[in-house]
Each structure stands twice: as C-alpha cells, then as structure tokens.
Length: 114
Length: 114
Picture 1 (cartoon, rainbow over the protein chains, first blue to last red):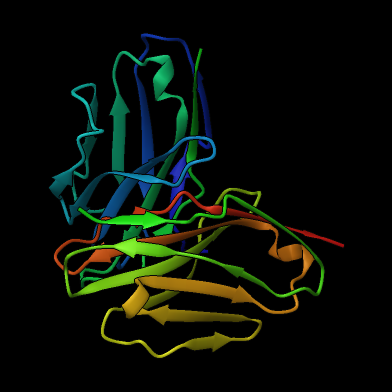
Picture 2 (picture 1 turned 90 degrees about the vertical axis):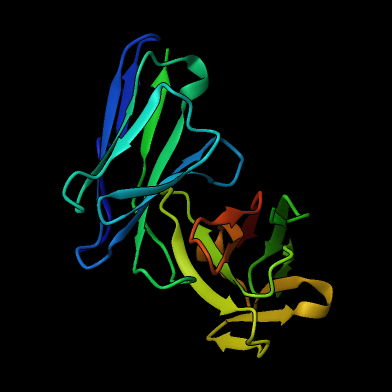
C-alpha cells in the first residue's frame, strides 16, 4: 500500500510537554498538507508545503507549532508546550501540484493532552 | 474568504432508502473546485469526487450521484438504495485555483439502519 502514512496513530501527553508527529506522503506527490480536526467538526487547514517550501500557514498555527519538510519527502509537525486545547486529530494529506487536484489523507494522529 | 455549509448535521435512514446530503458554498472566485469526502468510523477521509467550477454536468457513479448547480451555489450528493456500509460522516469541501488548501463544511453524519 502506497497511501499516506502517519506516525504515531495515537499520542497521550501531559500538558507542557512537546510532541512531534510524522507524515509520509504518496511518493510522487509534491504537495503536503496538515489539518486539525476536533470532535464533531470538519478538518481545519494548518499549513502546506510544495516540495520543501512551506507556502502557507493558517492563523490557527500559533508560535508553539512548527512544521518542516526538509527534503521534500516526509514532514514533521511539532507542538511545543502542549495545552489541553491542542487535543485533536492531526491529519496529513498529499496531492500533485496542479490546482484542484484531490488530496489523499492519512489515518491521522489522535493527540490527547491531559 | 470562502465558506462551505452543510446544514444537515445528522440524517438517519433505513436501508434501501435514497438520501441526499446538501452542500452550499460561498466564494467570490470564478475558478474553484468542489469535493466530497467520506469519513467512516475508522476515521480516514476517503476522496469521493472532484468537480471544477466550469463543469456543471452532473455525475453518477454506481449508487452515488452529484448535482452541481452554480446558480444556487450548491453541490448536493445523493446515495441511492442506501446500505449500512454507507454509514459515515460526509464532508463537502472547496478549494480555489490559486492554492490548494481545502475549506471543509461541518459534515453530515449519515446513519443507515438495517
């Protein structure tokens, strides 16, 4: 299976700790996206990359959040000094470059901050 | 800014009934793309269809059909002869040509009872 993969699938952490999530996109896709989904809501855009360049960041992405895609392949999303409000499902998606091309999503990382 | 509204938060039907999920969108751009995704209980978003703003032709794929009407800014999704396996949350989403971030609606939870 060559779909989008995310690791870990679940993460429980204490408030104030740092966490890092990884996303591996579909291999030929040069765009990679991060979304956050809270219970009962639709996913909300956080940021996206074209190759290694981070092209857009949402206002939802506070200073405690940082994302990287160092070699244009996998990406990491780090949350520093986690807060209970950070508890959510973090979704990664990838697509080809052309506008409007469908995004394929990974299974997500569910973060619980206690 | 763009917006997607799914007014139906939950729909419950009995197996073999037809069901229509509504989606209304707002954007000032003339070029845009609309999507439907399915999120089953397992949590992974599954791409169903993409439609661009220049193509108002309706589409049918098996038991699924989509009705795109620019005049009413709607992109509705009909499942014919629903099955229990159709039970999921369905999201409508919009993206503009200039960037690929998806704006999602709040989702409609469909429950198909045997």
